[in-house]
Image 1 (cartoon, rainbow, N blue to C red):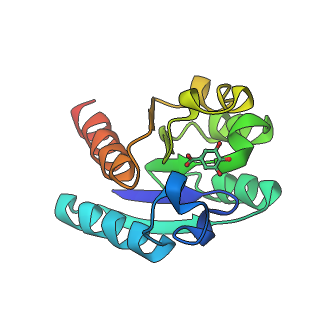
Image 2 (cartoon, rainbow, N blue to C red):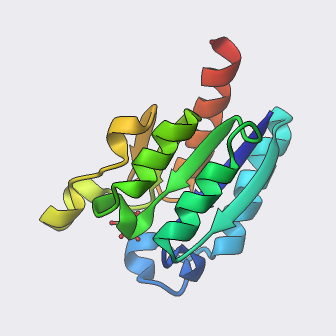
Amino acid sequence: MKFLIMNGPNLNLLGLREPEIYGKQDYNALLSLCQKVCGELGVEMESYQSNHEGALVDKIQDCYQKIDGIVLNPAAYTHTSVAIPDALKAVSIPCVEVHLSDINAREEFRKHSFVSPVAIKTICGKGLAGYEEAIRYLYRYLTEK
Ligand code: DQA
């Protein structure tokens, strides 16, 4: 089984970026945590981060028949992109949506996610731990179905 941990714009700057909202741990710490959890479950892991919507769409398309599940933090594209959820629907790969912060408790424009309707679950406001929960949820979803 193989999972893709996918992160959208500015998440490469974790630690530096608004630490009071997104925490002090950096992007490498996020990947190490995901790697640890996947390793425990015996799941192979790939990671991908891009600041470009089209690159994220290309990567989702590339996952077809190669990746069993996607953990996705679309970052700002959560609130603007139709192409990302369209790509997820096209490849029919189960996706858990993750947000470090609680998008429902911030500005109005963050309350709407175009990705949520196509995700099997959305986890927000749990910081890095949300990624661990997402990996475990995806694993259960795929092994119990
Ligand atoms: C985010 C929330 C988004 O609103 C924001 O644009 C991000 C990060 C989060 O992880 O909390 O870049 O997805």
